[in-house]
Every structure is written in structure tokens, then in C-alpha cells.
Image 1: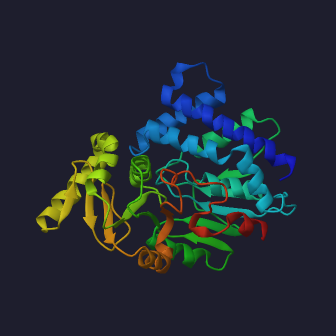
Image 2: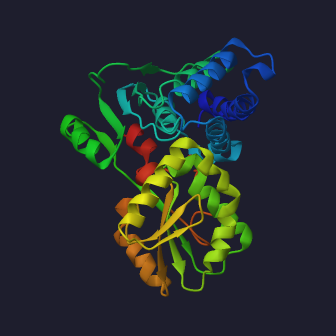
Image 3: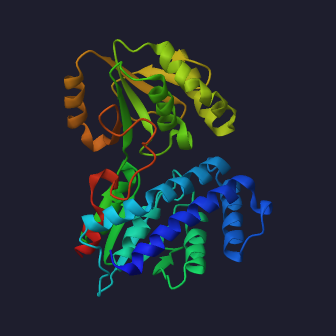
Length: 348
């Protein structure tokens, strides 16, 4: 990567780490620059407008971005793309953002501007405050850095290419409107875990972060667990127990109570520890407050099933795949749906 981006990205990672502390302590805990004060205000507004965006979730998202922009990761990412030279002919890239977890569209916007294009971003109604304040802060604090970003409030308008993230239903509309343009269109995906019975207590406790971070609403959150017959449910429940207070969040509790009542009335066989339901099913995408599971004896057969259902799966957490506790800590090169966003943008 040329020096135009290498140093600013590394410095941005340091800023995100500092911002996470500000969010956890509150804006009044320290004297803030105008840009940091504006971000703290945006975080407060985001929490008020979207109850899923708790103080801890916003801070955790910032820490995840800081980890993503470690110096070694930035260098490796650049090498993977031949140095990521800035394009001379910029194009308008429409980005339709999801809003399931805080600042989830950051990576798409970052890739677009690093590739030398203009990002025209249509933010989700669930997350309209954080990214504009975050990039404004970077422009204010990183001297000489300017991001070519338009935060589009109305219709997306005329663009040269599109990166759109949504549900399986909205993807059909995206295909209809943008199918003739170069595009990346993402649908629903969820993540799974595979436990073969050899996991340590520490690994099972780390798995609980993969399940409960962001209330389980991210595509990289584990919503389905494949359990070898040797796995003891008591060990799993004990590992999940530190997250028991999650049920004190009213929206999470509403989901948990709704599905518990619904399935009990239908005579479903559930496992319940008073803050999360475990339901045996072949489905992968579980609702908030629920983890799906299947038992198995043959890991090779499970791997075959996962390969056949790869279009439904974002990542797999196991001894040999994504490490336990790291599903929500993607690297710069862990592109959503396995589609290389940088290669797409640099090839336009």
C-alpha cells in the first residue's frame, strides 16, 4: 500500500481504541476535541434511537475496528492486493448499508475510498449517526486525510456500481434495480459452531461471546451449534452462564419470552436456562434469544453438510476454523460472503 493510506489506517485504529474508552466512560469523563465530542453525541443519539446499540456494543464495535487495523494486518492486506494503489479514474460506488450491528458498513466504505472511488452511502435507518461522525473525526484528526464520501439521505441516485447488504427479500429488489450494474449483493447469512467434544472450558466460554455479542444479531454471530454426542450440555450451559444478564435487556427479553411461549404451546422440546433457548432443528438462522443445535457422531458428514449449505453460512467456529471467541473479530481480508470487495472495486 502506498504511504497515502498505510499510516492513516494504522492511526485510525489507534483512534478507534481511544473512542471505545470514551463511549464506555461517557462524554463527560474527559475534555474532548470537537470531533470527539461530536462522536460521543452521535453514540448517545444512536443508543436512544436504537435500543440494540448499547454502550458496550458500540464500544465493542470500535475495538473490533481497532483490532482490524493493526499495523501487521494493514501491511498484509496491502500485500494481498499488490499494494492497493489509488485509482486515477474514480467511480461512484453506491453502498446500501445494513443496520444490524453498529457501524457494520465501515469495511465497505473503507474499501471504496482506499480503492480511490467515491462512496455514496445509503445508511440504514437503524444506524444513521455513527459512521458519518466516525469518518468526520478521522478527517479532523488525521492530517491530510480526506474521504470522498456522500451520505445519501434520499434515493441512491446514479452510481457506477453497487454494494448492497440486506435480507433475502430485499436482495430481490436490489437485483431488480441494480442487476445491470457491477454489483455485490449480500443476503441473509449466519454463522455456526462445531464442537467435537475436545474443547476446553476456556474455548466454550469464548464461544459464548460468538453467540451473545451484539445480542446475536450479526451475520458472524453463531446461531447454530453442531454438538458431538460426547458433549455434555451442562458444560455448555455453564460456559454460557456469564451472559445471563443479557435477559435484562428488554428487547432481548421480549424475543426470548415470545419464542419460549410459542414453542411451549406447540409442544416443542426445548432446553432452557432462563436466558437462552436451545432448540434441536436442522435450520441455521435462529431468532434472537435462541440457539439452534444438532447432535452428530460423524464430523466428516457435518463438514459435508456445511459445504452443501455454504450459501447460508458466513463463518464456522471450531478447533480448526475461526477460533472460539473470534467470530466477531474479522480481519481486513475476511470479506463478507467470501467475495473479495477490494478485488471487485479495483477491477472497475
